[in-house]
Figure (cartoon, rainbow, N blue to C red):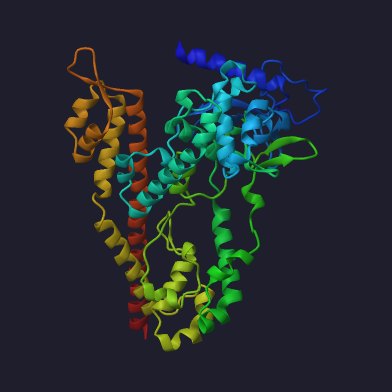
Length: 508
């Protein structure tokens, strides 16, 4: 019955959207009049994709790449300007007392203020269908942050929490002045508002805080694929051609030049934008879609940790994920590649820059200048050099893995246990018979006693903890898998090079 009620509510939302001019009809509306009951049906329909983002938008017909599939009028967008049409809100926000707040902080306060209006809000049908919580890193507890295991990831989560708390405290005086309801003044409410913005806001040219776009935010995420790797190679080639001569002679690095690089590939990462001529936010098919398939939106290139930080989800197969391995301090004295470009791809292969940098590092100092042109072109220098580089990478990957508290097999078993906990009739019985981390979860969680007092039942809060814990375990499994795949790649390549060398010697 609850699902039926939710479906009915969503149908009312789509009807509300249609009445405001949101439409997936890309032709003349006089020839194809808008349905009075839904803003969808000509190009898109709401569907459920359990293994690919949950609720999303599916094609109701074959769609061609670049075809306009949805437009949302400017008047429907939730922006600072549209929310500040409320005179009381405007008078407080425009007070110089709060001029230090960022545009995003202001939008978060405005969003909470609008939520406080309840059914009297003009956007009520939309606001009621926003998620009630998000699993962004800023919402992670200490237990969930530690479950990430990797120091850099834990630090990123701690920084996200600290930043959110700081921004919340800075905005407190404005929210108090607006007399928001007590439940809207909490840190949890602030996390909800800021996460709604970070995960759903779209770029608009007139406001850096962006906008919330009813119906337009139903598109699920599509990770940019091959084009991002192509872009990496193009940028590395440009770095090589422009810096090859100077980097080894005067100590400059590409960090000093990155700002001058052209914005290659920006258009291909964008599937929508605000169209001034149409006075609407317009969305386009990023590729050809067959009827019934999910239509996706490319938000940009994100690693899984960045997806967790800003959107509260991750991908099992993310072509943009990467693992950074620490380099020896002495390496940075002659390497011209920016640190962010030296990493291991999700499939375990070292990046172009990492291989090039290590090939140069493994070369005797007195020979580096003479072979720099080969390094920057991506060429192998010698079998010995290549094997030395791959052994170094493999050794460091193994060292990172050995320093983590669990191995991937243990993590996979734990993930299976978490899945069972979510569906088990007696969850605490399963937790108590599981390993140390599961018992730590039991101690860290807010559990409630059942009616008979003999079994503990999970509250809604604890279910959210489980979901975030699960995400942390999934992230570290993906991280470890990349390192393991890199060791395998290095081993296979080393064996192949060694065999080729032996064969060449025998044929002489």
